[in-house]
Each structure stands twice: as structure tokens, then as C-alpha cells.
Length: 191
Image 1 (cartoon, rainbow, N blue to C red):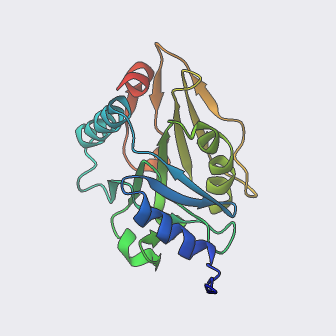
Image 2: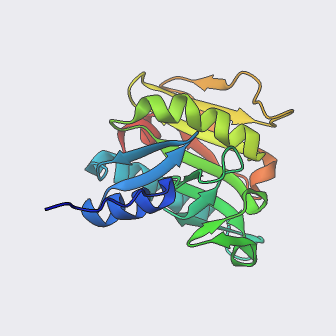
Image 3: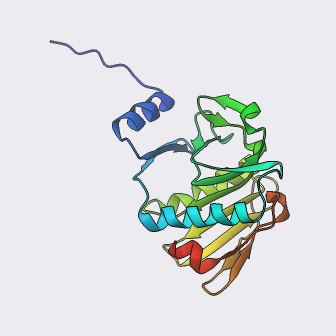
């Protein structure tokens, strides 16, 4: 008996994979489908402490909001999208809806990734994709290499070399984020 096979688009394959792997983060980066397992406790605690710092800095009423796990449409290839761990977006980001649950990059002020098993994506393709999308600031909490990297001010689709922060230092978010926040590297790395 013959079985008909239907060829899937990359987007359809991503949807199927997301349904098959609940809790995983499914993204398409530079035409490559990726699936990342759920984060560990330290990862989640780092995000919690980051969000608390944003709240203490007075993000409410500032014209921006923080949001976890919202889709970012990437202009690199037609099906590309990412789901950053945390984003600081304009209050009216929902007006920039592109498709499904992805939003246009122009409403993102900051994206944050805390490395897990997919650390090479956070340090490679995402740097390129976020720069090409014009994201003003990209913060990578690089638990693999025990440092925090801050990429800012992309030009011509590329970020200049990042600022690198080591344990014992603090990271000040750039003004483009919309609130003044300074975070301990140790807290970001350890949760």
C-alpha cells in the first residue's frame, strides 16, 4: 500500500515540532529549525531577578514593558523567527503583530538570552539575526563561558564587538532600553 507524503514548509515543520515537544522553544534561525529544552532553575531565577530589577527601576509607566518568551519576527529569511528569553518592548508592541505570535523587530528595545544547551545559537546566529533586525541591545548571559556580553547599536546589519563583563562587575543597560538598570554579573550568571 502506498502512503502519500506531504512536503512541509519550514514554518509548518516548526509548528509540528512545537506540538510534539511541549515546553521546548522552537525557533527558525537563518533557515535552520532549532528546538531547545526547557530551562533549568538557575536560568529561570536569573530571569526572575532581571525582571525584579526592571520593576525596581520603574519600568511601569515608562513606555516600555518586559515580556518573556514572545516571538520576534526576523527579516533574515522569510520563515525566520526567534523567541528570546526576555524582551523589553514598546508598550504598544501588539500593534506590530506580523504573523502568528511574532512581532516586528522595531518595537524591541532589548533582547536577553541566558545560555543553555543551545549556547552556540545565542553566541552565533542570534547575534547576526538580531543585528540584521536592528535590535538596539542584545544581552547574552553566557553561562558556558562565565561572562555577560552586551551588544549595542547595530549598523549595516552588524553589531560592533560586545562589551564583556566578568564576575564581580555590574552591567548597566543602555539608555535605548528606556529605564536605567544596573545588574550584577554574578546574579545574572547564578540566578
